[in-house]
Length: 528
Image (tube, rainbow, N blue to C red; front, side, top):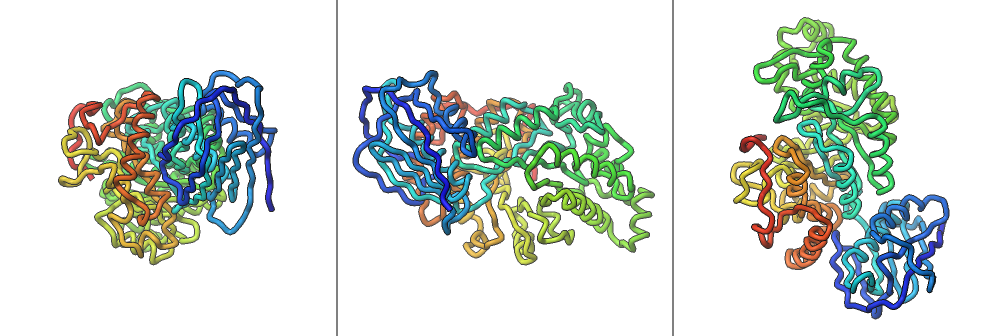
């Protein structure tokens, strides 16, 4: 069934006809450049009737950047259609002729992807003053992976609504469609929960570099606004409530739920032996579901062993182990994860976990695994063998808090290894075998930016760009079409665009152009 919407495109004359280079990132699967150009003006506006495409058109107009409506000298029709053919979700066809623009998407995500391709053509178009010339072109395109994600850690350092929305804009520009929002960790809890107000006002105090910093958190109104902002950009937000480890901030606010302290890891875990812990988590997760209308909640499950020694002398945990004939404290950890996963499932949500949870025996049909430990390929193999859906986000090369160049001083390395933009571009084929990354249960890729060494948005941008562009290629295109020279050529055009928009980026072709931003009090070293 095909559904169409005609949108009016207004533009002014006269206009300058210019040659057009196709510098899109990610590069479309099939591009056929025709003779001629469609002439438009930078003040062009799209107009849509109220309906399913209104948000997309509103996004496009906001990004297009004009300040006024063009004169009504001439009228152009833009056709947007949904055609549910036998193509991948997110697929689209974009055609530009001398008089028309047609976007045909297999679904609403495909329509949006087509509009983003049009947006990039406009943003990177050559012209003079307000005048632009778009090439006549036919593009057929589809994503390699359905999950093309980015994680931002706001527990270690908080950046706020405007910074997050700027990231979402760039994600949309690069067709990245999943925003993994790490909102809780040892250093801070960053959103309000009505039933437990101290999670914001007390657990929100402090960050990685200043334990006494004033509380920083998102109100529920803030969260809803950001979720809606992402939705308009075809991005799903996945909230992460890390448990049972990384719980120090929450336990600071409500110590009754703490699993105790180990050397160097104060109140690191929730207590799996107390029934009230599960009541608390259930209350929190129900509010999370009300704030995030998507169908996924990430429950962490990583690095619990850092604080598990405290359970050895905990009477509640020992009672739990005795009642269930557990012989190992990890069984108590897995018991906790199973109960929380069941709670999430009853909220009609899918469960997401870090790769330590592969050993927990969680239900395969309900759980997606983030594989992050590149030094443990056996865990990835085990997850796939068991049938879990897996998202690839290994430290090498997809942790963006790792340095980008051997000369950089602030950030992490793995021994002497770091994560250059080309390492990101060539993932996953530079890390995994074709049999692994082509496995049907590998649903996508994701870059993670942990913020122990990131305090300012300036440094945040320096770590993101241009690696975010390389990530877009990693998630969209197969290894057979990747070419360093061609990618570098396109990337240079994007660096020019970064400069125009005020982004503080790392320039791999001229490393001294923007000096490295160093926020941290001292280098973080080679942490895992």
